[in-house]
Every structure is written in structure tokens, then in C-alpha cells.
Image (cartoon, rainbow, N blue to C red):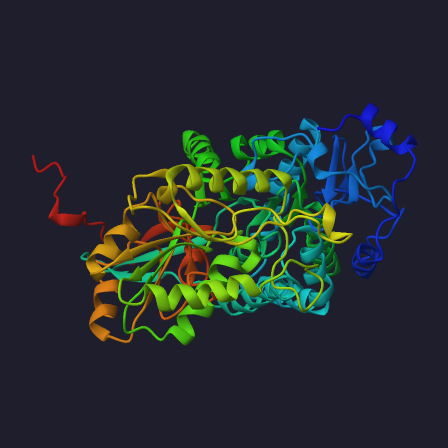
Length: 572
């Protein structure tokens, strides 16, 4: 955490380098201009009184902005500064998925945000669902108007390539579209009663306050999945984003709050509290929060789940994904090889659904790996804002440590490093300040899914390869790890398909055939099983988690019989 005294020292220090033109252009497009003060907390009003939060560009290492939540005058501001600092100077906190240290909303401010969220819920729950859908339609339009600018901001602050950044904003747009229709279709059921003159209704009603704790790797879309369904259901939503991506959360909240204000809806229906671990703990433990949706590591997810359940709250967990692709001898390699390449290298291996394990049938090993290795060797690191770039940086210096530790473990185990295995060196400025590593293909000496080489999710572009002879063996390996998010089978044999998607097949939440592990659409529910957390977001029946259900028995007869034929009357 950077103290106020340290901040003062930094402000007095001479500027090392002006904010780059690439960064300035992106920030200016979203009115995050140099010297302009913007808040980092929103609860219907912008304010704050916490410490300093920094946004560091993973491509260049330059500090893009500070959220300075000074208590003076109770003004919280985000200041885009002209100063370059190395990301390694940030203090490490135990927060989800390699996020960097950051500021916190003060305890009093957090409590106020929670209370205002509760007050806003009491208003919003009475807004008719189709009207809530109309508000979502306007949010969709406002986001679509800023799609390119927001996509560029994601690339700048998170590090994923621009087409993926724009695609992430499109996910938010798509789920808003989905929720507009859903607002007229969040139906209950009529259940037949055994008693004459009775009917039973299963009725969904708004749940309350939904807290969304999102991770750095999808700094916009995951919030969008939750917000769209939560608003359609009639809830208030409080967003605690990753502390290393505050600009994305501020930009999105400005767009959403503008729509709410124009419709006379309390702004705290979609609130924002930026900060580090202590803010997250405060949100998770608050009895004012009815449901917590958490995306992050298995270790932190376990703590979140225990804390929320200890107070009998609802919890939705999206945790680790140690995803496998299985390639059969009859697979179309023209499809499979590029899909595995994207799954393992896209977003520099920082998707929850990234391909981390590759199981190849023994008859195609050489053919597949030679083609895959050629693709790996063709990729070059670059500025993610450049449309020609396929490989951007890891998000933080800590992520680079995770990568290096994984490579060291593989080497010590005797694994063959087919390609990659090191950070890029001697890159030209400004990329020389970035977090660039070589995508790696490793072939461990054996497949033992109990070994951490196979059972641990490495959130970096490291792909481990194993060889099998029978599909049943590959399925056993696929299912043998603790995680169960995404899986992929490549085959043209319908019998293999039946095994893969059936009761003895993949136990993951996403079970694909001739589709990679990464790149899900919003129409189906997204989520995983086992230590991935069993949560479901986005489409399908995911909306049912954002409401409270009541069974309502209605008696419109002239008698009051008991169920199951029970008689309880004094016959004496």
C-alpha cells in the first residue's frame, strides 16, 4: 500500500517520462484526461477516503493513473499522472489471481456504500421487470457507443490484445441484450395441488444486494454478466473490481450510472468500491450483502465461500480452470491445431478457460506438435493496441514469477521444453518495460494427475502435453485434477462424442466437441464444477441464482384441508 507520505514524495519527484501518446489517446477517449480528477468510489455520489491505488500498464510498465482517495474535503480523485514507475515497486497483497496492491475505501465509506446499496434495492425491486429491461437496453446502447474505446482501455490496463478487449466489451453488450428479453421471461411455475380448490405457485422475487468481486483478466465482461442478470432480477449490485484494473471499472461505472441517473434510478443500484484485500473482506463479511459473486483463485474462493456461508449468505464462485484438450486420431488437425494455439496462447494464457493440458493420441503426436510448434515460433510479443499483435504481456510482475516458477518445476522434473521457457529479453522500447514471456510447450516425463505439474493451474502461457492410446485413459486424465471448468474433444467419430458428453465422460462444466476450451458464448450458463466452484453465470438458468424463490400455496375454496390426508380435529 502506498501511504500519503509516499505519495507526496512521488509528487515532488521529477517526472521520469511523460505519459505515452498511446496511453493518453486511450484515456482521453473515455474522458480520463491528464490532470483531471475523477473519483474511485461510487454509491450514487462519487467520493472516497482511502489510500492510493495505482494502475500500471503491463505493456510498458508506466503508471497510467492513481486513484488518490484523500480525506481532505472528502474528495476522492483519480489523477492521470505523467510519471513512470516499475510495477515491481507495488506492494504484494494476497488478492485474487496476481492482482497488484491497491487502495481501499475507508471502513466508513464502505459501510455507507453498502447501506446505500440496500436503500437503492428497496426502490429498484418495485420497478416493473420490463422497465428494468428498458434500462438495460439503454445501458447496452451506451456501452456499444463506447465499445472501441473501452476495448482499447482493457488492452491498455489489462494487457490483452485489442480484438480481445473489444470482444470483451461485446460480451457485456450481448448479455445486456439477453437480459432485456429475460426481463419479460423470468417466470415462476404453477404446480398442481392435491387439495381441492388449491394452487401452488413458485414465485421468484428480487434477492437484495449482490456484490461482484471480479478478477483482472476480464475486468469488464464478468461484471457485465453479473450486473445484467442482477438488474433484470431487481437487485442492487456493488462492484469491487480487481485493484490493478481500476480504470476499467471507473469507465464502465460512469457509463452505467449515467443511464441510471437519466431514468431517475438511484445510482447505488450499480455501485463501485475500489480497493484491495481489506475492502473485499469488508464486502464479503457484510450482512447487508445477500449474495457474493467471486471470480478468482481457488485458495481465495475457499475463504470467500466459508465467510459467506458462515453468515448464511448466497455465494457464486468462478475459480480455477485447469483445462484439457483431447485430440483423437480422426481429428481434423486444420481445426484442432489453431484452436489449441488460441486456447493456450490467447490472452497470454490468462483466461480461466485457457488450455493448460493437451492430451494427444499416440498416432498423431508428431504431426500435431510440429504444426503447433510452428505456430508458437511464429508469434511475437507486441503492443496489444496494435491490431497485428497476437501476444501481449502478463498482467503483473507477480504473474511473471508464477511463470518462471512453473518453468523451473518442469525443468527440475526432467520435462522436455519443446519451445519457450523464458522471458523475452532485449525488447525495443517501450516494450522493454513490459511483462512479456515466451509461450511454452512442455512434455513432462509422465502423466500423473496427482503431481502438481498437472493438478495445479498455472495462470500463464504454459502448455503440458501427455500421450494416450485409448479415449478412456484421456477422460480419466481430464477428470483427475481438482478443477472442472472447461474441456475439449477433437474427433469426427460420433461414438467418441457420446462417451465424452455422457455420464462417464468429461466432468467439467463446459464440455466441448471440435471447439476449443476458450471462448464461450453468453447464451449458455458459464461455470465449472469441483474446485472451480460450481457457480454459473451469464446465460441458461444462471438468472435463477439472482432471485429468492417462494412456494406459495393459495386456497380459494371454502375448506382448509391438510395435505397428505392428515386429520387434526377434535372428534370427541
